[in-house]
Amino acid sequence: MRIPLASPDIGDSEIEAVREVLDDGRLALGPKLREFERALATYVGADCAVAVNSGTSALHLVLEGFGIGEGDEVITTPFSFVASANCVHFVRARLVFADIDPGTLCIDPAAVESAISLKTKAILGVDVFGHPADWPALEEIAARYELLLIEDSAESLGSVQSGRRCGSFGHAAVFGFYPNKQITTGEGGMVVTGDRELERICRSMANQGRGDGDDWLEHVRLGYNYRMDELSAALGVAQMGRIGEILEARGSVASLYDEALSGIEGILTPRAVGDVGVSWFVYVIRLDDAFERADRDRVIRGLTERGIGCRNYFAPIHLQPFYRDRFGTREGEYPVAEAAGARTIALPFHNRLSENEIDYVASALREELGRIR
Image (cartoon, rainbow, N blue to C red):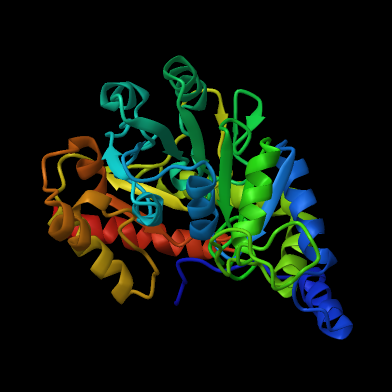
């Protein structure tokens, strides 16, 4: 049996939506772009949105659009996909890590407050694996210290905390639509915000720095080619039309995993902590403290040899080769993130994963863990 780590949910409506754009012939800056922006902003509960070509581009635009730059500090998590930290370097600000909560694996508000200095400009939280960060606590800290609060919700479209959807807490938020996300546009991302001036600046920067006028060759600021194309936007519109169905399917797969893995000793399955609803970007288990990184790596190799797609989500950012070499970061600085990074395994997860496939994964995992004991 071969089971991929992830697989997009593409149906007839998505194929037809893309075909309509091809038939129309307008492949860039067309009506589907704005339709997708309106659909996602409405869903999240934001006033406005700017679609771009990746979640990384979206985060870069937000940081630059807020004027964050050299001399400023941005506090974020070391346990995330590397882009959330890299974007801080794009704008030449100083990156400050704060360790994570051991239950949610999201940034720990207490660690954030301890890291604040006179140079801190923003808090950048990340909804890790689709689980919301503690946004109410981060909102309170940001307000008290008069800091910007930015949501990296690239993994949490549809997740909810305290009755509010992720993407509605900070001064701005970003989403990503890579094929392993809840919805996909192939490649793509989105800025959502209630700040109309930020929207205007991000839209300009994403379009080579063009202004609001009709002069295509007039550029009023430094910009980038971060535009989302019309084919991707059409795919996004179709996916948003099925967002309820998609999230329900992902929740069902997660429940099947919970049941199949319930009798396996030595693992921690993902759980929602607090007043949250998780939209299930991935399904990541953790080996308990009796296991070490080498054991986890052996399990991954064994599962891979059985045709099961799996991965060590995430390797802590501060231990990435670039960060070690460039900034001198080292083991021991963020022990909670490091402990999680040494024991996590992302199992195959997508909408159409069957119960038989999940049972196969569970059986293989039990056997591989048995070999280590």
